[in-house]
Image 1 (cartoon, rainbow, N blue to C red):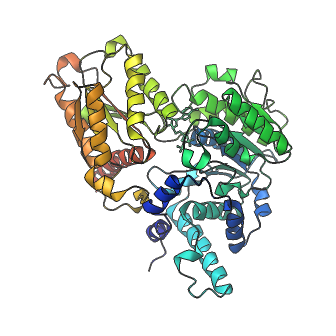
Image 2: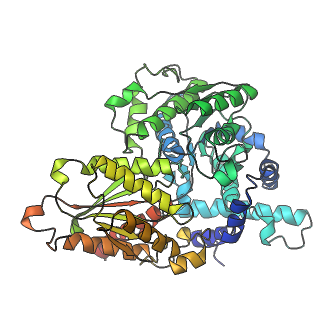
Amino acid sequence: MARDYNAAVAALNTLQSNFSIVDAIRKSGRGMNQNAIPEMIEWVKRIGYEPSDFDKLNAIHIAGTKGKGSTSSFISSILYQYTKSSSGNAPRKVGLYTSPHLRFVRERIQINNQPLSEETFAKYFYETWDRLEASAAAANHPNPSSPDTKPVYFRFLTLMAFHCYMSEGVDAAVIECGIGGEYDSTNILVKPSVTGVTSLGIDHTAMLGETIDSIAWHKAGIFKPDVPAFSAPQPEGAVQVLQQRAAERSTTVDIVATHPALDSIKLGLAGDFQKINASVAIATASAYLQQQGHTDMPSPNDGSALLPEPFRIGLEQVRLGGRCEIRHDPAHNLTWHIDGGHTLESIEMAGRWFASLIQHPSTTSNLPRILIFNQQTRDASSLAMRLHTTLATALNNRRPFTEVIFCTNTTYASTGFRPDLTSVNTNAADVEALSVQHELAKTWAEVDPDAKVSVVKTIEEAVVLARTAGTVGTAGTTVSDGAHSSEDVKVLVTGSLHLVGGVIEVLESEVEEAARSRTT
Ligand SMILES: Nc1ncnc2c1ncn2[C@@H]1O[C@H](COP(=O)(O)OP(=O)(O)OP(=O)(O)O)[C@@H](O)[C@H]1O
């Protein structure tokens, strides 16, 4: 069988824990596996490394509830600007390891802001895979190719990313934690160059505990002796926990305020909250560069200093899909507003961002405003209600959406079966019965009986429905009527990064298909 990218993704998918296992862990209240780090170290050894080998990567290790992906992307984008410098102490290759992915699993492992190519992904995938089987064979395992000779999905990808970065000579690796910090697979790092904690909130409570303090305890587990640590502003109790944990680990944590230079920088990621993510990125990137001998750095914790030009460019040029992203769809008179918020705090941020775009008096026309929403595994109704309240408040009790579409995260992309988008972490029976979606529809109808609420199964159907609603308009007038021609219909897609990934997949596939048919 060919050992290409598609085969690698199919093999990787066999390592996903199925829904019943994930659900049992969630319900057991057992919390995180406290043996996770010794177990992960064992896997590291099986692929031929000692954890301290990864000191070479000069990792910038990022934990947090919200903003890890954005902050990590800002850091990578800033440091990438320095790879262009001729200075001897500039990084040459910047790694970025994030999760989850939107369209392609290879988005998770980047070098110099580019996802690994399909060929490079397959190469490091099979090297990691083969080393694990060889180590099982050496230990006289009766069947070295059986599943128990490999770790689960996220652990495998972490091993593979570290192996790839070591082999490619990455000298600044931005590593985002998966869940928590103390027991996260990435926390095998012995001596990162700097650590950062982004905004904390309530999420993954079955594993991290119910309170901000216990969540802070887990996230602070990435602090290391004598390694500088930075944090976004946090609620009082959480700051104390972070400081105490830092002291136990023989370091200190600096709480970073919004950097004043950001008043005059247009960040590449929209949304007010990105300023705090960018500020944590500025502090951590400065600390990394100072350690490498850059003397012209702003002091990482001195918010009054001006920013060097590569910082400004990096902050402006950063790209990350599905975070307050706007896509115009002129063929359908639509604008897509796409944000993967999926906790109470982040759905509120997404709501405020969308409200800020529709609050203007010129947008108070009777054009449809459409929501596409799903959240398959968390408390979907509370998230939807928080979104409703945030928008209704911001709009002085005007109806947030004329049309609301609840769908699953499933896409049957016109391009065919897409193994990158397969997730077995959801309850297949729920998806089949659309039970979450019907419950959401009921809840929404209670708070807004006049909104048109629909339930559909796939993301493609939701996209088609939104476009139809957009074209017809609420009052039966077409949007392209002269009276409305300068406006478009606004669609918000939110509730889940999987949903957002699927919508982006559908929209991008159309663009790619159109480009293909132009060239043939
Ligand atoms: N500082 C922040 N405060 C509140 N919400 C935020 C913040 N940063 C990002 N978000 C929200 O969280 C969503 C995910 O952003 P991002 O990927 O940066 O965070 P993350 O911590 O990596 O999230 P996840 O662990 O869920 O992937 C965004 O779409 C946005 O809605």
